[in-house]
Amino acid sequence: MDLLGGLQITQGAITQAAQRLAADGSALAAHVDALQTQIQQAPFVHHDDTGWRIGAQNAWVGTFRSADTVVFRANLRHTNVEVREGLGHTFAGVLISDRFSSYDSRFLQDVQQQKCLAHLIRTADEVAAVLQRQPGRGELYGQRVAQVFRDGIRLHRDVTTGICTCEAYAQQGECHTLLRVRPAESGAAEVECKRTTPTGNPEEARAGSGVAVPEGPG
Image (cartoon, rainbow, N blue to C red; front, side):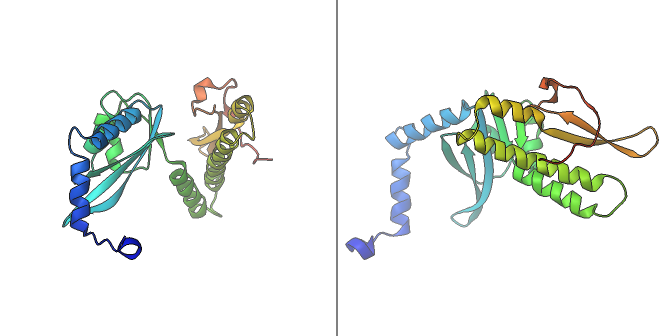
């Protein structure tokens, strides 16, 4: 503003103006409350924290994002309390987050949760790398799980951009498989293949499960 209009404003003046605008009862405060209500009523909400500073104190900014709303909340703590305050006590949607320990709190045990697929893909890739060239199917397990999540992300992108229909989305989603290793009676590890729906719930799949190693995509 100094460069374009010759107007000099200090950081303190900006902070004080922001505090006045956001005071209780102000139009901005009412707008923020309305956005918070939209977040609390959303079918899904992404949440993440990032480091921040409030004066000389360490703090965090929590980001709550639904399909069409974003709310930022600055906090001096980094616990499940701040997550619950943002979501509200009647949140009935799905919380999508990383694997920070605060999300494992017993106070969030009734909230449906989905862990960030990017984090899960990274972990699966790390598992495959560690188990590379070792006996057993551990490497295959990591590779296949990572590929399932990558396929799911691609499929979601296709349906949201109109490349495929919702019907095709459901059909392709049901064809994705998730693997889990279980001990076999012989003592060797077997891989159990479960079909899963786009919601991630194997119980909703039309087909049952069996011991198999599915082929890769294509």
